[in-house]
Structure formats: C-alpha cells, structure tokens
Length: 292
Image 1 (cartoon, rainbow, N blue to C red):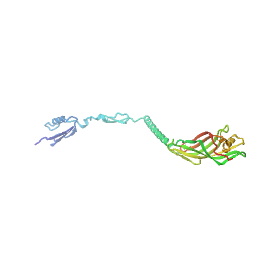
Image 2: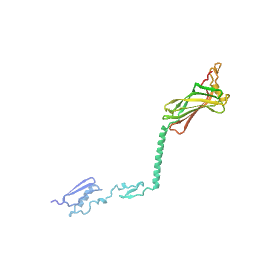
Image 3: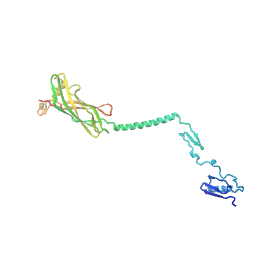
Image 4: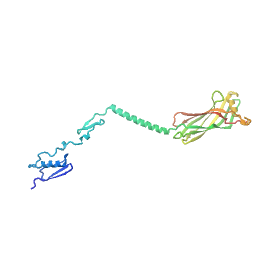
C-alpha cells in the first residue's frame, strides 16, 4: 500500500504539490527563490515519519514583501495623498492663496490668447481707409448752360459741375462701404482768406472694391454771392470763366487760372469716426465758359 504519494510540478517561480492520500500540506505559493532551492526545501519538509510538516516551507503570503513596493510611493506635493509602505496617507489640501494664483495665471493666459485672436480677426475684417486718386489737373466737367454771372441784384455767380476721381481700396482685405461722401471747394488765391465757392454730396452709399480702383463722379455746385461788383473773388472768377475766344491775345488764351482747395469727408461702415482727404490745385482752369 502506498503511504504517501506526491507529485511536484515546478515551472519558473511557481511550484504545485499534489498530495493524493491527503497526508501532506496543500498550498500553491509564489517563491522568491530559484526552483532548485524550492524543491530541496519541499522534500526535506515532507520526509518526516509523522506525515506532518515540521516547519513551514514558505512564509505566509502576507509576510512576503513585494519587491516593487517602493514603486508605488508618491512623493509629489501636487497630490492630495501618497502611498507609503503600502498605506494611503492624506495630504493637506491646496491653500486658497495658491489656488487663486494658479487660476489667475490660467485666466491671464486665456485672456491673452482671446485678445490675440480677436486682434488677428479684426486686422483682416476691418476695412482700411482707401486712397483717393485725382486726375492732374483735377477734372471738373462744367455745364455751360447752368452758368449765371450777375453783376447786380445781387452780384453773384453759380454753375454746376461734376468732379471725377477714384478710390484705391487695394490696401484693405475686404470691400469698404462709404457713406455721407461730401465735397467742399474753397478759393485760395482771390482773397486773403479761403472762401467756400462750391460743395457737393453723393446721395448714396458707395462700395469700394479691394481689388483695384473705383471711379466716382460727384455733382458739385459752385455758388458765390458778393457784396458788390468790385469784389475780388467775383472779379477773379468772372475773368477765369470768360469766353475763351474773346480772351485770346495773339492766339494765346489769357484766362487766368484758379487756386482751389478740394476736401472730401466720408464715413466708412465699421470704422469709428469721419475720414477726410484733400488736395490743393494751384493752377486749374474754370470748368465752364461764358458766352460772348
């Protein structure tokens, strides 16, 4: 009769002992020693005549210290708890002052990024003031049929013209919409003070293309009332707008030139404030011609 039959299977760090007659110790444990040492230890323990284990083959599983225990220790001060010697110990919470400072830094970064994004968007979306291109000399086209020069009751002159110029919108990334375009013409050379002698207005909004020049034609009405026939401004315009053939001397037109200051004022949709541009012409011919 077989008194004690055991089968021991060992692989790597695992040892399995099978006791068929229920005389030995039954266990499956992880050994930290090598396989050969484990076998010798088991055979020495099972050789007792009483069939009882004289000494434990291995220690209890709980008594084994894991070789990787130290890897789970968390010493960073950012954690509210840390694992030391297998125990979870609480850490003091973050102070309100430190939390406020961290939130303030985060908020500052977010605000800066938001402002930068808005700035980039506005850089491309807000239209820029277009440049104004005039012909040289400035092109006034007058209507001779509307010209009136009265020497008395009252002494004045008036006539209608059209002013031609162009807006250059290539400096802008988007089309600009102009509103309330006004033109003012002032006389600079006929008296000591500049006097407004003409004005006009574009009665509709104007879209300025960002791809090139946009031609504009504005009606400008010239009008001036003098106190007497000898008024210097009235006399200067009467001679400048006289009949061309009548003013010829030896084949040369002797009509005097005019000195004018032309200013434009307008608003751009999406841009705060009124915009302005101006040009001074020191030698410009009268845009109309009086009859003989």
